[in-house]
Length: 137
Length: 60
Image (cartoon, rainbow over all chains, first blue to last red):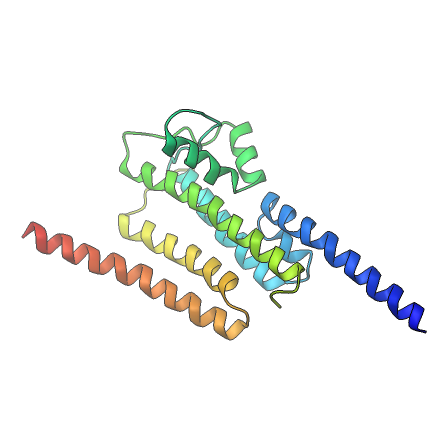
């Protein structure tokens, strides 16, 4: 009986341990997926919507998607923020979206929307990690 | 796909999305999440309105 309980708790600990790595990675790649994996459906949908809306509104406003660069510090930070969107970023780069438009003031807001979408997604991925390790319900 | 948002609409969309994420990630219970999200939203939008009046006052 005691052996069965120990085996069950050890199995649960292993699952929680692997989830603490998988959930934030999945949440980074696909916004909200880290919460879906832990059956937090409502939170996952809201996080996914928030990040998707920010990202696609940014693209719609003709914001710029930064590529990898070693130039200006703000451009490097822009790239770091953009990569936070996970697959959205790589799809945008692959499809050649987000060329930017310096003639429109709104396009500059769009650039910031895309960066902030990535940063919000990183916060969401960290939250998925916190849930996986039991620091948050 | 081409959105031509006004400054206020852009700030409003930003406030909705950011406060949603802040509310969910920074609090533990659903009730607290809603309250904190609403608080952040009010600060974002209120900050925009206050800043715009300050700029108007500076100009005049």
